[in-house]
Every structure is written in C-alpha cells, then in structure tokens.
Image (cartoon, rainbow, N blue to C red; front, side, top):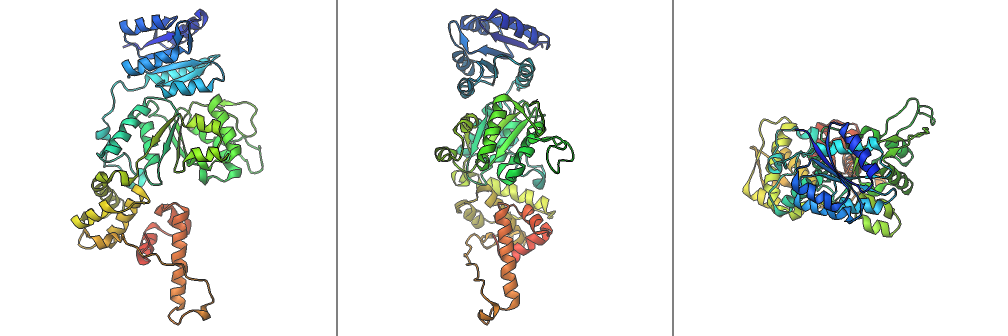
Length: 459
C-alpha cells in the first residue's frame, strides 16, 4: 500500500516544493495550511508520516506534535524549525517528534529523514521475546538483550521501545557495568536504522592527539603519517547510530567540534576543504553525572543540552535483585559455551541466595566475573557458596623494600609472585575488568590469564 504523508506549512511555495519532492519518492501527499486543516485531515484519513512547520497561523506546530504523540503514537512526526533554533528542535524531540529539519530545507536531508521514518515498524516489537534470546555466542556479542522481569528492568525496556521510534539524542546514564552499551544497541536494533551500522566508541580510550582524525577522518598527506585517506567514525556510522561511550572524557576542544557536527549534520575531515554530510543518530553514555561537570566548566553546557534531550537511566543490579537468578543461569550457560565446557554447572540454593544478597559495585559485569571464577573453582558441576569467593580479604600491596631487608619467609619466588599478581590487577583495572582485553594487554592467552587469576585468588 502506498505510504501517505501529511505536510503542514502556511507558505504555499514550501508546500508545493515538499509535495513535489515527496511525490517523486513515490509517496502520496496531503497538504494543510494550518493546524485546523491538519486536524481535520488526521481525523479523516490514515497517514504514514507527518511533517509540520513550527510557526502556523492558528498556533504552534509543537501542539500538533503533542496531540499526535497522544492520539496517534504510531505516526512518526517531524518538525521544520527556523535555522539556528536549537531550542525549538530539542523541545520538539522531548515532546515526541521523530526528528527535525531546519530551514532552508535541504531536500537530500529531508528525503533521508522521511525514508528513515517510513521504516518504523507498524507494531511494537515483543520485547519480552527479544529479552530471552539465549542462543547467541557470549564472547561475540556479550549480553544481547536485557534479561529480567523486575519492575526496574520492565520500565527500562518500555522506555527503550519508545526511544527506538524516535531520532532524539539519548543520554544513557548508570553505574559501570549496568548495561549502557547494551541499551544503546537495543535502541538501534529496534529502530528504523537497524539495517545500518551501529558504531560504539569509547571516548576515553582515544589519545587526544588522534581524536579529530578518528572521529572525522583525514585526507592523504594532511599530516605526517597520513599515508592514505581515512574514513572517520561519523562516516562509518552514516545512516546508522554512533554511540559516544564515556562522553564525559571528551576534551573541551573536541566538544566544540562535536557540537558543530551535530548541528550541521556534516563533518570536515582533516585536510579537506568541503564538509561531508552525515546522517547519524547520536546516543551517549556515561557513568559520571554530567550536570556537575557542566557547572564546573569541564563539559560544555550547549553540548550537554544537545546530547541530553532524553535521559535513559540504567538500573544497577541492586535495584533489580529479582532478576539475579535469571541472569546468573543465563550467564552460566553462555560462559560454559564460550569456554567449551560439556555442560553448565548448577548453582546450589545457598549459593544463589548469596548471589542475590551480594553488594554488586560492578553490577552485571561483576556478576559475570563472579560466575566465571565460580565455574573454574567448582567441583562435581555444582557451584557452592565457597566457589563464589564473595568475601575477599583485601591484601595490602607489599612494600618495595630491598630483598635482603624482608622477613626470612619472603623468598625470591614469593617476591616474584607478588609482582606478577600486581601486574594482573593493574591490567584488569586498566581494561575496566575486561578479562579478554587484560590478557591481550599482558600478551598471554585467555586460558593462561584465567589460570593465573585462579592461582592468585583475584576477583
């Protein structure tokens, strides 16, 4: 069935231009000159997409956006804003607009916007069915979906479902290990950009001097060592979604450049004279609370305003203890498959009770680490309380004094073991407790790294 678009603008020339442009895309178009005509059209016919100006003779286009969000929630609506009116665009997105386009309207951007909006699924996906997708390789994609039935996680799933139907920038907040990247991936996978790239980037992991090249690309010969043209992360994510993880770690000079890219929807590679248009949805994540950083002058308020259009708070594991049993059983299955174990071990009732009452400072990531250790330690394919090793005694780092001055019990072997243990702990800390990356950092195999963790009782 032919898609039907409603266009609302009080200027005849603009209505005619938009009608012609959309009709050439094979769309059926109905135009309206004001809110009254638009409301009558909505009551009489069914539409696939709506595009409205902000300023209309009988009111504000934002009122119509709010009405459509309430009465026709499946109808994506975009707004036309005056050039430079960032506040209008942000407000429109907050109250339910799918996206926005600025005057003078760039027709190529408009066509992409409408095409993306028309991809939205007519029916809401079954999030519960997606949440128990357990057959994906653990090492390849981590936690594919949010698992659990607690009130906190159900609320989170519902919000993700709504955010997937919008192009609004989202700030995903939450403690380390709470699943911020997972949530971002779900927003992408459930939205109209699902068939396009999802590009996550850890802003704190890129050296400052390479940031501009990594984000925006460069041309051959633009600086020493630039032997070929390089595509930046924005170009790599064109048509899809770019996740700015740990966005609080961006230096101020990059915050300025990022703001311009978001506003202009174009990047300027190093050495280039002409900007390249990019169509990217921006999602951000941070375990730090950004507002205090804004007040301290460490994060630009205008960039915060653009990125934090809608906030998605991710609950910590302490807020969803009812999910721990389901999470633990799922992770045991996936870890066992990753390690090519014959079968997943069983968690004893006492061990499960201990897991459910543990204080998880590292959230879901910590639970995974505990279970990895427990699989290594358990016998008879049953995980008992002792195998979890939840009560760890903190051992102070040995003083680096001359070997001759140490107690008689301190042998050369134990001295070397102390150094080795410290290297393992440092590698884990530097990689934020990602065992695979820590093993790579030390230049040893993952199996060898796992053995050494067991040897030194490192959590």
